[in-house]
Length: 372
Ligand SMILES: [Mg+2]
Image (cartoon, rainbow, N blue to C red; front, side):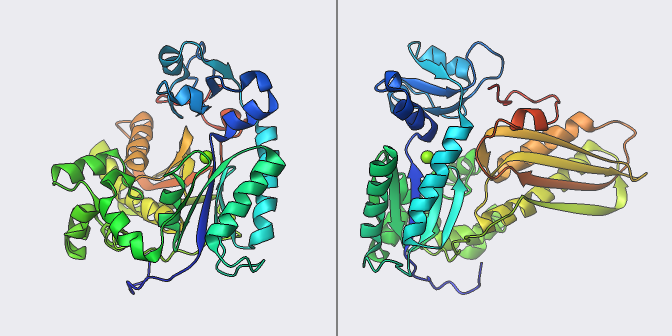
């Protein structure tokens, strides 16, 4: 983030496919159309979770990352199917090909979601809203799927906008309405605000962007750490992050070597909280969310171990990063451990892959394991 609070005006579109996996299934299997469909793990097996639910299933309260068992309780008539990642990957490639007709600045966030910078208007269409309309139409005509688009002058607002009129939505939030929009936004919708932070904000009487705006940058930083500065800017509609087309990042992390060996769990937790903050800041900077968190531990005898945990949906909130790292730490902790270095990293920035199950390490705290 620059120190200059001035807004850079770009033309950004955020495209998000509607109920992606479920929509592909309903497209390919007519018998699923109009039905409550859950793509994910089996409700009979242990640990099965919902990857995506069709809109018909969502009416019953079924949501992504919920256990499949719970989904079945909420919606006993739901049809459960396993994901077909090869099919989703192929659709994803086709979507990106459509994007590339309109811009070369494409930043995929997952199989079904991307930022597009259309400032340069490759086809001389003349308006970002019109470009978004044409992309949505091409996806509908060529792939028989619907997408929602958010159009604005920066990534943050475009992403929030795409969620507003889902499914098959198109929402434009222009420069003159951004501040007003941000003021009315509930705090939990702010980028990177996890449940714990949202709770803390509410206890402080901060419920909307307007409440956050009443605080100075110094006050926000005091209460929320470095990310306070980001809140300060974003609540004023300022987000100068660029669309990064060739992002090849495989993992983002941070580690710390200690002058003295750590021997108590309290010390380790305290250090992990600091490292989690750094990782969080880096993820926020690059607007990355990962599904796998890896804890690295190096002992005084230079022996090194890693432990990781994967989640069904990508995350980058500070609470989950810190809590997961501490849980993994508690598992590997022993009374006689002398620890020289600790590190946390996030990886798996794409969507769920079938490989995930084999590659992750087993260990306690695995209740979120996917069972496909
Ligand atoms: Mg989506």
